[in-house]
Length: 88
Image (cartoon, rainbow, N blue to C red; front, side):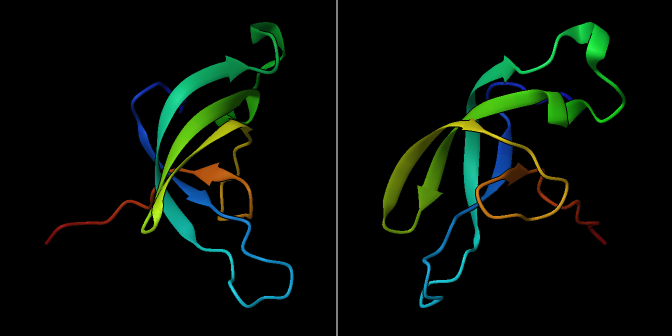
């Protein structure tokens, strides 16, 4: 799925080097999208061909990140789509 401005995503923060504060997922909103590969070189994994700018929401405040890469699974310093949750 192609990322677009205004979409809610998850950002996995970096945590700290000694592990006192482990990385965790934060809510974020996409504020800008930039292609990193031309259309003719894109395959079916659409998200990997874009960098996004994020506005990240932390409990202690807000932060902006530029050119954040995509990961299909939670990975430090990357964004991913929130998991789908079925409502019963």
